[in-house]
Image (tube, rainbow, N blue to C red; front, side):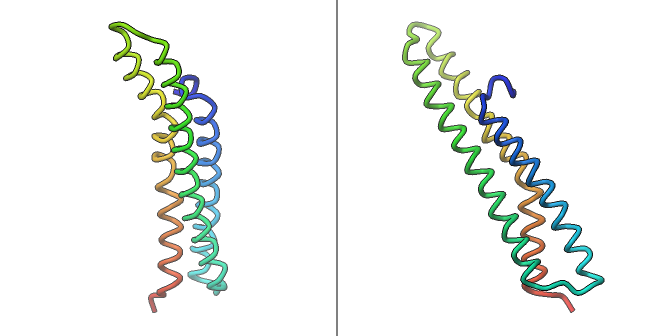
Length: 125
């Protein structure tokens, strides 16, 4: 998957793993805030940053998909005959690798950010 998906797969993987580390950090601060008071602004900012970051990872994944499709259309344009349809299908499959990886890596940071924002904005007392 990584060798076929091109450089965009590595960018999405790096950003996704950084998102997991950010989600872990925000989760630790959120759990600590349940026992020790922490500023609401800090928690709202951290949760909002995670939501923004998850959206950024999806955007980078879609940029990778578009780049892969542009490269694939150039390569398939030179192909003719009975193998053209199979080449188009394979090129589309390979171009989807970055966005698929982004959709795999995004839910955890997004949900941690959403939970932090919702819980901080509407505290349960």
